[in-house]
Image (cartoon, rainbow, N blue to C red; front, side):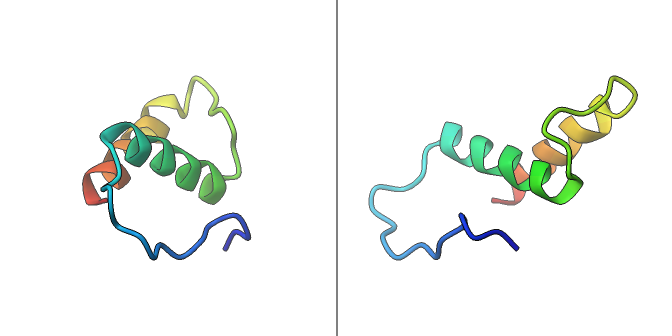
Length: 56
């Protein structure tokens, strides 16, 4: 999917909430193809980031 995404080998220390949120945002940006959504899609974009964050 993305050459910048690496396998995680070291789980200590665990990822912070901020790191998980930032990773979720990057993931949704990559899948959607948008760095910043339009106003019409902003709510759905934010909802997708929230969903991925909760899943992680």
